[in-house]
View 1: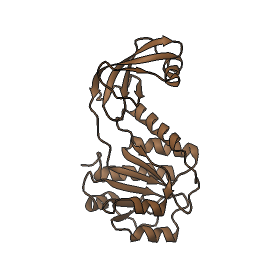
View 2: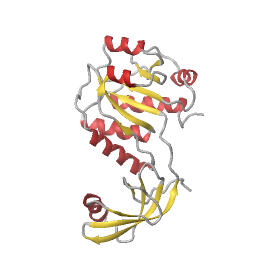
View 3: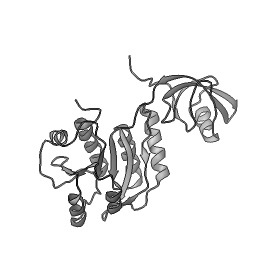
View 4: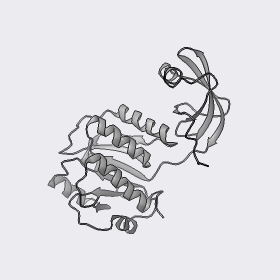
Length: 249
């Protein structure tokens, strides 16, 4: 039997969850459940808020676009956020949506957009990123919602990061090696780590020098092929998860 219930509709809510709690749905949420998904009065749902685990609830319709959720019992205990802070140069809308969703599915603990000299998309919609993160969590049985940060410059990011935290720098010019073995040798399993994937134009010489001067900066390769930024995100997160995350030994 599957560990997760993939058949019941999951819904993220911001309110505290507990037995007997009644939640008034916002009009948009009620309309989605009643008129888009066409759930009927009494239908079961699974609720989570990123703090209290996953709970069974039932839908109580009080109008065409009005409904409540009555919380019944806990299904799963809360899980902790992962160990990877995903740092990335933003890309254009549709592909950024995709990249955010995949990073959440791969267990990113936070999403930190960083503006570099060659970043194509200088403006980032934080609310849109949060909505994509929640949608990915709803669809994939994830209980922890990653922190979504405002975009900052690469220089500010490097100042803000804890100096003791390792930064994994994905460098298209790095020499070929066994990347998983390299990361396992350099990092303890489960260590909180920042993973940086740059813009499609790559980092310029000044930025490369700034990164390589940082203590605890580990330069890795993603292989011999040039990858688009959204593809690089999945490849890099997979390598780090295999080395030190919940996909590791």
